[in-house]
Image (cartoon, rainbow over all chains, first blue to last red; front, side):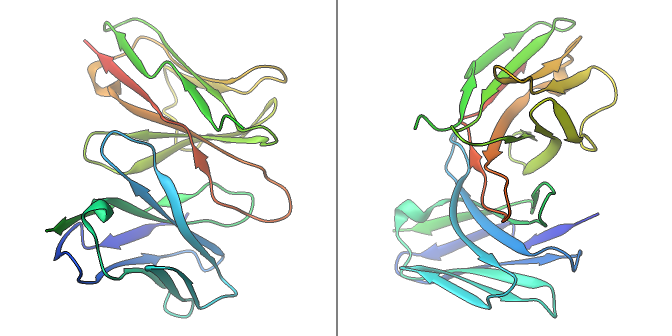
Length: 111
Length: 115
């Protein structure tokens, strides 16, 4: 089955700097890669996703890149703000199957 | 659209009791997924259901845990004879299914505490 790894487990950046979180997956059949943000005590919320036929996607300060050959994908947050502090989860999925989540990255943006 | 509704938000049970968690998917969504999240940990898949069918229950413990998604009404995750280790947040997610895969919408979760 699918296995998703995520690094780093914790990340601290200064406000205004960039943050990068990396994930790898094992199942070459996976074709959908969402990213979720979870604030303390709240539900995970989808922030961006990418499909396997796309190499990069951007939404304002957030971007995701995908390298299918290497089976890894990354989340990039630019100009970080304190409200970006949260736990971020990557996931990998194939149609008709459940999402497999990475273990999460706790991002702290220091003012 | 009220989103994915889970209840109760908080549930306290004594060891040995039964816990029943409910999830109503978003309107138009026919796929429901249950995940468990232990404190400071990630989301662990438990079970994937469509109406009246269990599609994948590979993440659900074989004993004490069961799930259903009846033709009418919410999806139910049932934990019998709860133990302290069952204490966790249980999240339900739904998706529309169909021809293309899309991101889940999660409910607010049920935080189960076993005392």
